[in-house]
Image (cartoon, rainbow, N blue to C red; front, side, top):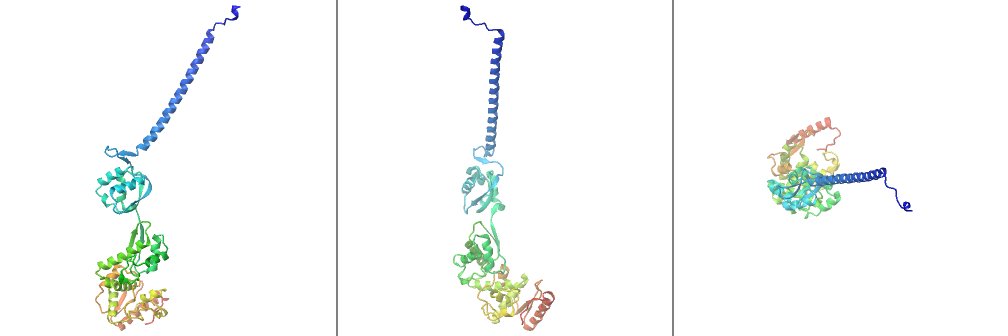
Length: 380
């Protein structure tokens, strides 16, 4: 009965099979271990690479541990440097905008730059993530300034200038005109008696983005006052000089004629003679051509210098400095007449008496007949 409970002794073949199975299991575990290790190494390498790429954008200034970017940066951001800002204040603006890695880095670069104090207030477009020294250089480069430019030509009237001001502001021409009506706000001198015509000095101006019409207008008025003062004009004579200069501006085609035309104006005023300037008539009756028609000459207006003696009530356009200088220092002549005899070249002839003037006027008529036969000339 005992043989019923006994087991058969394991054979060599059975033992070998079990050994092989254990070896396969161990080999499988080793393979998975190697895969896991390899995966971990790859993940670690990726992490190190990302971290290094992030960190290598920084460097330390002289080993002080101050964070700074390398290179000239990437992307674009607008920053505003206010008037009177210190280097530290600029640093904070740039750091908050993502331009520099730390305020300290910019302050160090600012202090190390001999030109940094020349950084002007304004709006700038600069790169993000710039090395601090490059950020200083960027603020010193005028090409990075964001400016609105407005060019005011000579010899135009207020409506033209209101449109140009509207183009660089968020206002309409009508809104600009409303702002201009507040003559105290724009600094118009009392001598102008509330008349802005002629007081917006023709020049090219630059303003920061977001500029308001009142700032543009006051800047132009201020420039007119500056030019008048620089040319020795007393405040009580501001309006008269601008009025004479505006007529010169509209009548002269060549700079050389400005002082001569001014002399004709003053010579006629001295003897209470009508100025008879087509340009003053055209101010109140705008129309085609440089010459006033017979119908236009009949207009009843103090600006009609064919009817009323003396200067018109105010300027008829914005004169440039050359015309203002002519009004201040006219040529010393006895001329009472002038006429442009060639409308293409601007050649102008002058006369002391009416007989001589008629000869010059006939020369103009002959030129018009040959070159602009459709031009209507007023009768003498």
